[in-house]
Length: 394
Image (cartoon, rainbow, N blue to C red; front, side):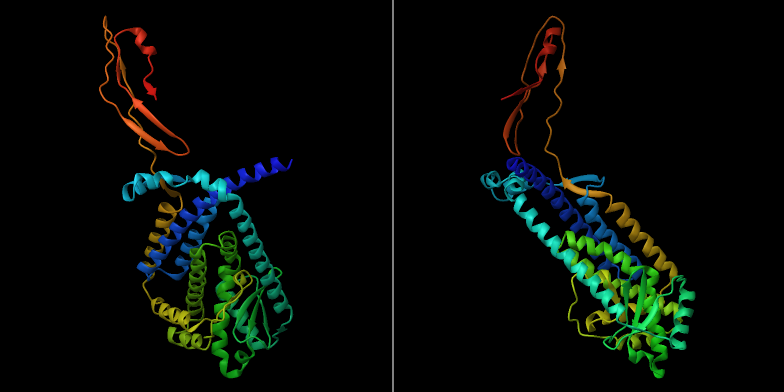
């Protein structure tokens, strides 16, 4: 019984490491493409860049669960490259993927399960903390803030109005998840009479998160980061996704309030906070308008593009999304297959039998075994020659 379970675990670990390796390579390549597009074309709207990063993260899940993909056999075989660059002896001594998966698949799978367990614990802690924080807040009953909230919800098309609360420990506004309803936390200093305009802009930004369903979409990155916690590109993608989400909400808030970009930027400067770091899965439970000085600088620079031509933005969004959806997501780059020998021909000539060797091709193929194929072209003259083998194996 124990040996049977051990055998099943060995088979499962080999299957897992094969799927994980494919997802790691293809997903990382997709994230690199998204990062290159974002850097090469900074005028791409922030809301479009959000979808680019989400599609890049989704690529890892598609590969891990082996969704149907179109193979592009353009990569050279690793052993062939090593044999040309280093030596044939070096290439021969490298263990195959099957050997590596048998030797290291089990321990790596155990470490992966342990990492996922820690990630799930972090998610649970973040959700509990967010729920606890939302439960220990005080509802705002003042007429003016609730009027701002009601009017902005109507302008932005939000049917389920969040609850407006405040708490003494809050230094920046944030949106928390509580049951099936969002809670917008406002610092007490923003409720002062001289901060009315700032309060309206801040509420518009937080409601933009609600309108865009950022808390729900953040679960995509949370799941991917739990499964691929060892991939640094996933962490970079999460950071860039959070920043682009804030940029997209900034644009939506400016348009909803009809405020000037300079006035909104002045409000953003009051939200600069040192980046102490939060829990690894905190984005699944809350969003906050505060940022470090470096991130806030990027958000302020993005405000300059709000007044860009809508036609240019639409064309850029369509072009980049089509590029990712049509050229990156459905395809996977794989190694080219080994060269196949030409099909052997058998011809028949009346009253004469002539078997001649016109050419010989010796090919060495190494996977787990080595074999040499001697390909012989045959020319036959009698009907009985059709029974001759077209390929002789030695």
